[in-house]
Image (cartoon, rainbow, N blue to C red; front, side, top):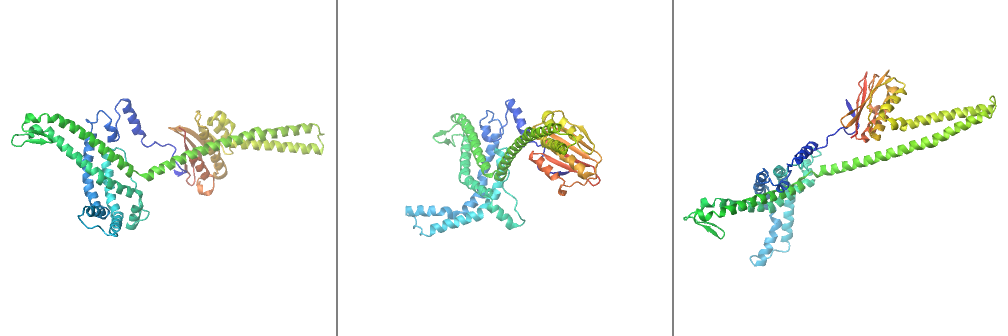
Length: 472
C-alpha cells in the first residue's frame, strides 16, 4: 500500500520490554542495576560482575590517557609552559620571561589545541563510548552527525563545528589530568593489598617484609597483615566502583546524543501542543454545533410555524397566500440544509450511540450502495470517533464523485490499541492525493490524531482506503 500522512497508528514505546522485565524482577526482589553506581548500593555488589567491570574500566583509564592524553599534553605544552617559566624566575633559577613571551606561548598553545585537539578527541571519544559499556548498560548514542556533503573538507567542517567533538576533547583532558592519576593511585593501593594478603608467603628472615612501620621477618609475624589486606582489598574494589562510576557518569553526560535528546524534547512539546489544539478544535466544534442546533435551527422552525399560521388567515387563492407558502417552503429547505450541516459537523447519533449506529446511517445516505461489513459496538474517545466518521464521510463522497463505483464497503475493527477503518470500492481506481480529491486533507486530519492513512488504488481498481487511529 502507498502510505500518506504522518505518524504510525500503533507504536511500542522504546524500552517497554525492558521496563516490563525489570518490573517483574523488582517484584521478585532482584532488580538489575543499569550502572555500577546503582550496583554499589546493593548487597550483592561484591559477588556480582560489576566489581570486575569497574576494575577493568579503572585499569584501562591510564591506557586511554597514555594513547591520547599524553600526545595532547605534548602538543599543548605552550599552554602551561609559562607557569613553569614564571615559577623558575620567582625561585631565581632562570631569567624572567619577556612581556611578549607568555602571550605568544599561550596563543600558540591555544592554536595547537584547536587544531590537533579534535583529531585526538574523536578516536578517544569512540574508545570512551566503548569503555562506557563496562560501567553503564545504557546506550549513550552518538552526538556526531554525518557531513552534509561528501569529501574531506565537509567532514572536517562538520567535526570541528560540532559540540560533541569539543565535549569529547573536554572528557579527554579530564581523563588525563584527573581520572588517570586516581586510577594509578588506586592500582598502587591494590598492589599493597595483594602484598599484605600474601605476606606469610613473602616474609622471611633473609628478606624481611616491610609495609610502612610494620616489619615481618617470619610467616607467623605476617599473618596479622592478612585481615588488613582483605579489608583494604574490599575498600579498593568499592573505590574502583565509585571511581569508574563517576567517570562513566561524566562520560555519559558529555558523550550523550544531545541532538536526539533535544529533538525528543521538541517532539514531546509538539505532541502536547497538537493534543491541546485537538481539544480546542473539539470544544469549538461542539459549541458551533450547539449554537446551530439550539439557536438558528429553532428560529427557522419558529419562522416556518409562523408562516404556516399566516397562511391560515389568508384566502387560499390569493397572491399573498402563494407568497407565504413559497416562503414557508424555503424555510423548510433551509431547516433541512441546516440539519444536514449539523449532521456533517457531528451527528447526534454519533454522540449518543457511537460508530456502530452512525456509520450505517452514513451509508444509507450515500448515492452509491454501501455495505457496512463490521463495526465494533464499543465506544471510543470522542475525537477518535469524530475523525473516523469524517474519514468515512469524505471517502464515500469521493467514491460517489470520482470513482464510478457501483458498490462500496465500510468496515471498522479494533486491532490492539488502534481503531482500523477500511473503505473499499469497485471503481476505476487510480486515486492520487495530488489530484485534489481530498485525500491530502484526510491524511492531514488523521495525522493530527497521531494516526496514519494507507491507500491502495491501482488503475482499474479496486480502491482500498485504510485509516489507523490510536485509541489507547
